[in-house]
Image (cartoon, rainbow, N blue to C red; front, side):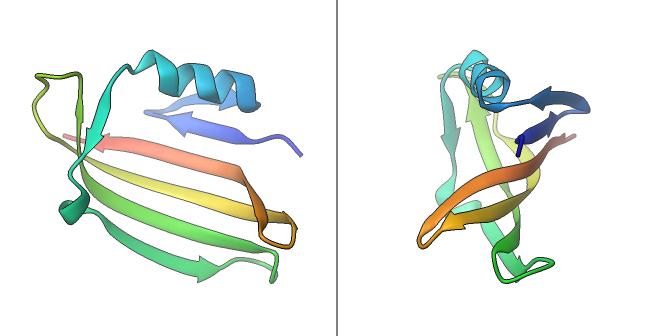
Length: 92
């Protein structure tokens, strides 16, 4: 199976493209107390859907930005998961 990321409306497929996108952002800092999460089991017992909202900074002096992210984890075995779908959006 191929992992897919949609970041601000642009699609990235496969682990290499996804990692490159996240690495290209540079330094990212999350305001952990501001994070909220919701988790639900997905279509079967081997997958779950996670929704995250919060605040982050991109770069050392960047202004805080609100974001939302939804991703699906799928089990590949006991205690092992991969991100199958990931959708990320900055909130302006």
